[in-house]
Length: 462
Image 1 (cartoon, rainbow, N blue to C red):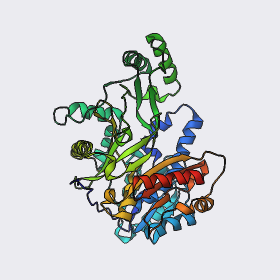
Image 2 (cartoon, rainbow, N blue to C red):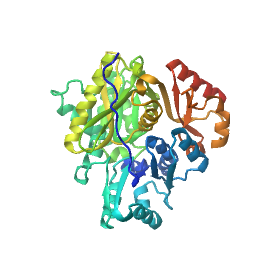
Image 3 (cartoon, one colour):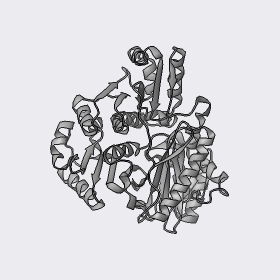
Image 4 (cartoon, helix red, strand yellow):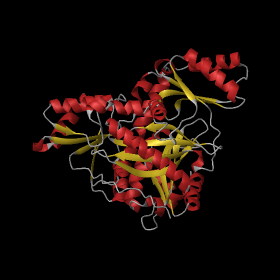
């Protein structure tokens, strides 16, 4: 029996707390520099359609006020409230949607008036974002100038907000790993370099590919697989000049490669027997600086390096690996806390066939699994790792051209929808994403076998 268990995190929001779903703002400089306007628009829209998933990250709350870029239908709200026994949910939607939702809020007089009204006579309000972006800080400063006393319980102070983009970048976590080599020897990353300019990046990457038969290139802060290039054996020429020319051609396709530092890393030979090859662990730094462990998982990652979802259970990771990644996570959390960061963060790893566990990145914000943590905590208690097996997917694409709305999808999936008495089944965590013919879901099963059976049944029903 393992001795380390998830900490019970008290995260009850007061009546005057407003949550802002600002997914795109977390990587706005990256989105803004995407060369293809259609791809840029699609990225913003996908984040906006997925924003109703943030409801489920508030599953442990009794009173919810959510500002989101897209409307949420009454049937979906009722579905959410019934699942988690929540009575009061208010959804606010700015008139304009640009991707920078905090700026959209600033330009929406009705929402600003609503925020001021919610503060009541005390003029106190709590604001909680998905990510502490520069746009969010601008909104906080504006409301403070309006005479409100704005508190940000899940954000660093303004003078410490640099920690979000620094530690949340590929170069920032690499610098921390290099500085911490003596203190924390388990915090190491794949062999690599940080450089500026696509010409140098292509040269370094080509040499590494020819020598090692594989290479990975990452922009400093990409999103959902965008900004990552993985070249495996036989995908490039073993001739240096040809490999360099091909890498440079690909880097020229998107302007963000020229705008930000580029990280060139060795390609790791992944061991899928260890958490699917991609262990991860999530924490939260409380306002007093305490680092709380939330959960560990195995990430579900595509061949292209795109995060799809998670497998969450005590048996996903062995005791030895669990100890290592948690020790690394606590160490990193203490460094973040000392620098002034407050809020959620995770550490992502890759398990290699040579037995090493490499750190790959840190997301310094709420994550693609934070909603799963809060759902599981509400439904199964703080020791959910031992009481259920969880599968989650954020972007499942329907294989045919059939279009589902929430009502028709519920009907099709009715045999396997989550049952409160049996404590098993699938929960639909985004209605708006169906507009893109995609599905976000979380499955709870008594065992891994049972959870996979439910997922297989879902795919057959669809």
